[in-house]
Image (cartoon, rainbow over all chains, first blue to last red; front, side):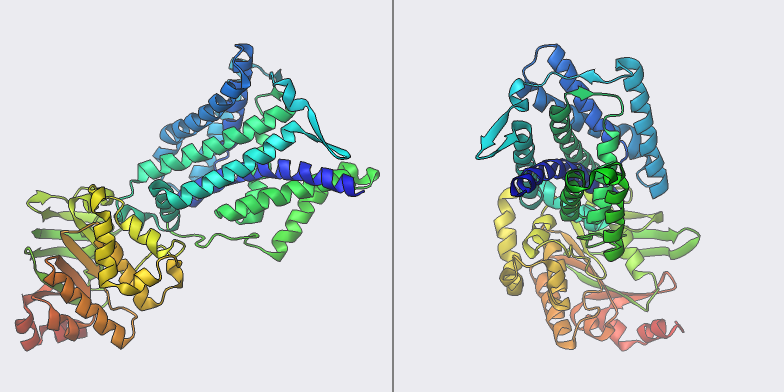
Length: 298
Length: 235
């Protein structure tokens, strides 16, 4: 029993970490622009297809993975430049609908230009192997996911606290006009936020695909929906909250799958969401709410 | 140094400033006085592009800056310590100051800028790692002014530096403002505390209903009753 708990905890940390990275990407953009980017999932899909094409071209995984992350970051910056900059000062609803439109357009492009169905992605064999720790086995892909999540969280913490651009992003999230008064360029800081969120989506996509070895046009939809739930659960706009919400959701899902009695298993999604709703009833602003909800946005 | 003419600010259909002319010479400390809602803050904010400018010309160092965005103005040497302080509460004191220097091109002068601010406000040095939101009101005001000084401004705009502070702290802040002028920083400030302002400024403008209703040296304004009238709404 203890082994099983330990095993499932590792699975939960691996899955929760991926949710946390995605939720962080949503939260970074939201905290600065006041917009939920529903096209975040399509950034993941772009990463997935980059991995697929690299695999077909025989590019080794150690090179294709950074390329896939770069592709998502680049796509995020382009998305901002083309679609979101023109509606930057519009209402939250306008921005939200714009992001839905971007997501829909990209999904249709994937379906028509690449493939309607799921395509296999070549993943190095070593990722599907396991390492034995005493009595139980841990998948290398799980270890990779956990290690990558930790590395990304440390990087992000360093970036936001130690670099000028990172500090400017936090300031812009709190009071955009005053950040501009300090000389922070709106375009630069918003483009930076998108690049960062795209990078996080790219990393999450590499981890996601390396567990599943396939990519389809709607690949990003479900994980980003989960990440959105995680971001709300953690406290929308709060970065620490996004991480907490991501891990929490990972734990809820994995533990329910592992420990629910068999006849209840098909209800695991509604039960999981029910737990989320209960937690939100208990803490309506999320686990770790953002300091300045509803502060002035650009 | 600063020459404003025909400045108008409008929020939608509401005109808050209706044609203001004022100028500030190099090295001067000038006050913009008037009752609540006279349009003082709107005027100051318009100078740095933070309130919607409807018409007018703003000349700074003989250049028209009226259409320049806020983020560029600070690089020209004009900055504002805003009303209500608006420090970044979730950032540390040191991070607030670091942001103050964000637009500063001469990165080698940063240490000097920190030293200067810490010399003026030793308490900020003590509280360097503390979150700015946890400072007292007076300390937050010092941080707001210190943050504005980090850029090495040629013209410093101060919006209600004494608002909401205890009387003793107000005195300290006013002493600091005249110390800044003595260091050669040109200052235009908006204040509600008329008596104390007139004790330290060179000149003053009095606003009412979005217009300048009186102007003159500190002595002239002290001697006349235009300021009182402006506050009572009879000017």
